[in-house]
Amino acid sequence: MPSYARKHQLQQSLVYHAFSRSSGRKVIFQESKDFDHFKILLGEYSNRFDSKIYHWVIMPNHYHLVVEFEYPELISKFMAGLHRAYSHYYHKQYNAVGFLWQGRFKLQPIQKDLYLKNCGRYVERNPVRAGMVAEACAYAHSSARFYCLGQEDGITRVSPDFEDFGKSAVVRQAVYKEFLGAFDSEEEAYFSNIEVPCGDQDFQRRLVKSGTHYFPRRQGRKAAIFVL
Image (cartoon, rainbow, N blue to C red; front, side):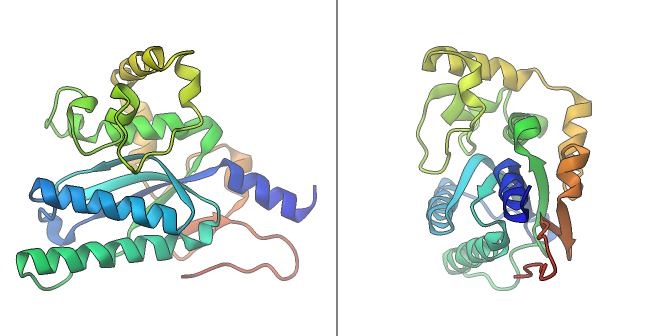
């Protein structure tokens, strides 16, 4: 298979589980307007960088995304821009100074066809694990309501796996809600260790590490890694 085809094939199966936390774990999403502003930014930056956010959650001091990029090498610019934009809002809103985010964000490569829906479940169950709600769709700041209740949020793109949950929207929503509750601790361990790629051996072999993040391996004599 030509090198371009191999690279394209990997990109078609690659999504990222992205995670970032506030500096010192302080609460940076304090009021509804803070969550709402960050949601607007997520929608704007997703469109700007030609990405698809399939699952997401915003917690009081951190957030998770499950996101696919047409050009994975742009993810660093996406995250940096998102962080700068929210920092500007937060500092102005609360008359604050200093670093808002804790170091570099974390990225976990996920093999889409094997682990996308499971990673999405891990992300959307964050408020349940934290004891904030009894079920994921009761939390207002995640993609769970998009899938369980059909609520548009301006962020979520329909996961390629969602059609598998049923033939009609009503059935898919009900089955997906059950799916969110049918988790196990072994599965969740895959996604809590966020810097370890999650996929089969062939998937992992076609990744290359640049700094702390993984990108599709480029083939040929002029192979290069994007560091942004």
